[in-house]
Length: 603
Image 1 (cartoon, rainbow, N blue to C red):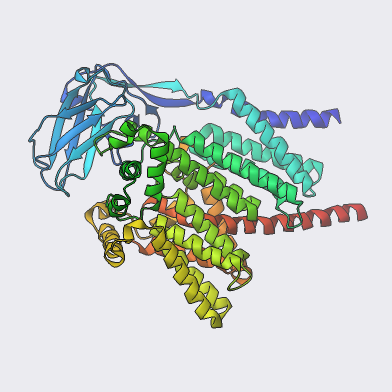
Image 2 (cartoon, rainbow, N blue to C red):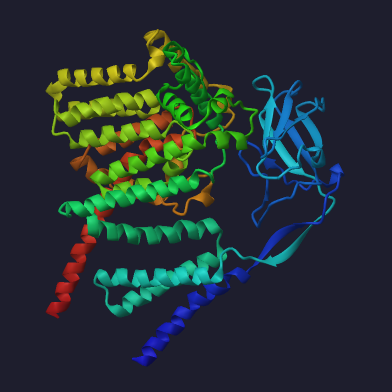
């Protein structure tokens, strides 16, 4: 017996030692030797400033190096399809400092600046930095910033990606959990232990040899699946005690809120936040004056319905002194200023994002947990974006329809009200799902079309009442808003990104591509795969979920604009479908475990 345990201990030493000494594997890291002003020694470490959000560090496949900018010269380049003459370039620092670069007429299609940071007001903290360039539309399609060095050398250093004791502790915990997991499902002690150590060893090697995102993605994925299984056993059953279900809902809400509030100060400024912040500031000014006419006639960011921005205005009015919201932000305000002024809006959205997860958890605790840890949902409901409020009411529409026993009950009418409010927040959360809902209703009850017509009329009425911008001129204002969106979708700004028609599929199967370091769980691809595997079964038992998911994805695939935050429209049906798949397989594993236990007793 002692020899057997000694053998297991020696076998465990393989992944343990790999994890413990993984930090000693060689890595190539760039070391700078100082600054210079010779343009011939630009080493190619430009940081593409696509969205005004980059931290301006130089990255390669081997390493990432944060560059100290003070006392070192830098370069700024503008590139365009045509000569970008007449553009005004502004660099914004993290203390509100602004440096406007002089006009420069360089070679065609390029403007090149040499900037000496000691001239920067109050010095410069290198991150974050924001480049603004104003020019006629189409003149500039790329802005770049880099550093100049007189010499750069590469040296071999020891990689210290994770504290070794932390790596060892996590892998030990994971192996013990896997051992207990396999034992629960009927495996004998010997093969369960061997399988757990094999998985632990493979993850230890991945930890040591592969990039950081790999083990973050898969290690947390396995741990999360174990936790999900425990939740299913404890609160996911249809016969679970109501107290357990309530505790699960509160736990999901707390987890979702913690993830989003943690992300609020960590996330870099999104390029849309200044637009929505500015619209909220205008509404705050109108609210302060009690000017209903100004609220109805506010045309800032008119391409989107005003409900979310009007709520933003109320939050700014309630949380800030008048001088704060009376001084509206602009694109030249700088990312740090926008992030600071938008902090109350980010917190508000984070709360609504957590409420959305709790709402889904009230119906299915596992699905609510998947919404809570979704990196896409957590990211964009922790920003001052329009997604949180319409996303909540879109989820309420879906869940109310699933709860409804048929036409003309209270859940059915509640779904119409929620759909109207979702449309008043953002068209994207209502148009495809309204169509899917009508198809589903007529599919279930073909003769109920008069009630369905009334349901749609109520949704449109709520949309109108919650959209004060339509009150003075409903047809004209709605037409202007919709035509702006269609023109924007086919405009040059969208086409320059060159996203293919299937880009939403990439967003669907990958975690958030921005700020990954903020979110500890990156399970989006696993959740999407589980959801798709459940479509066939759900089509026969709960057709509404595949219809909603299909309508949302078809719209995203056909619509020319492919921004990554659009994928949030399918988060709720995706989570419910994935939870259904996991529940099915958990029940199958449970039956297999009971059968294996009965066979052992027989033998």
